[in-house]
Image 1 (spheres, rainbow, N blue to C red):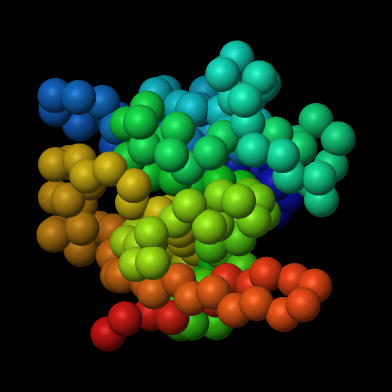
Image 2 (image 1 turned 135 degrees about the horizontal axis):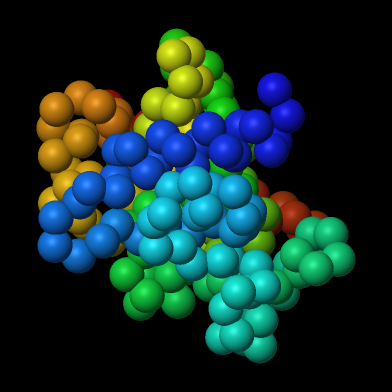
Length: 182
């Protein structure tokens, strides 16, 4: 399955899970602001600023990203905009996989590889696993609480756990690692 198919399926599933929320609609933030928002019909913040002037003009600089992807929405801005689920650049993982196996990569994808964004994450973040296929899931950072998402966690439709983000520095690089808190 290629990215396009995965993102269409992800959009459809997110719409099914979250599209019928009562009260304030669920808001997501991600980088592929095409298929997923279209098929989910959810309020979406484009993390790359292609559809968001404030991000396009004031985003965090991420020079390691490809051209057209070098400005990224700051996590502080996403919190202020009421983003509930931060998906970043979503990837699917096997539902049976232990989070400790893929968590560091997933955190980097969610913050879209911006060192400054990863630094803005709280020392302890809440991760939500969202099933998108029979044996696949995506992960998101739960930024702002929402009653409907809490209900999906309580009923077992979504899985949630807290993760401690730890910094380590070397002379040339900055690293964030993640550990699942039991």
